[in-house]
Image 1 (cartoon, one colour):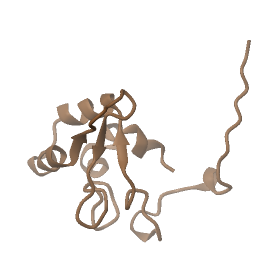
Image 2: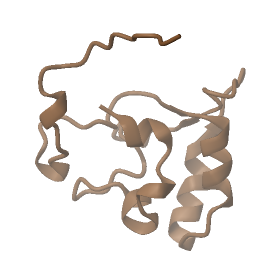
Image 3: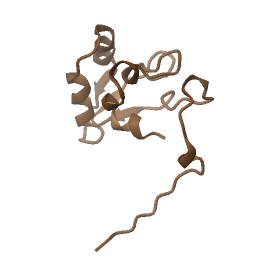
Length: 110
């Protein structure tokens, strides 16, 4: 038996591509980015630069009532932005460790 699913997506979705630093909006500014338990432990266990490790340790905060899908939050910086969002618009995790290290929420947004 097959199941049909209907998805609602914005008109621009199929042609979407990240403009990095030239975007009017930021996919990581001003909103709470929660990550799964699996993503949390992947980030905690990965090899990276000392600077990135320090930022990870400071920014990943386990939620008070964690679930497997919503285990931790990436704490925003003083600009209400994701701490991994660099001034050139790129993600520090992506730049230093590659796409494979991004949490699912970051991979699949928008």
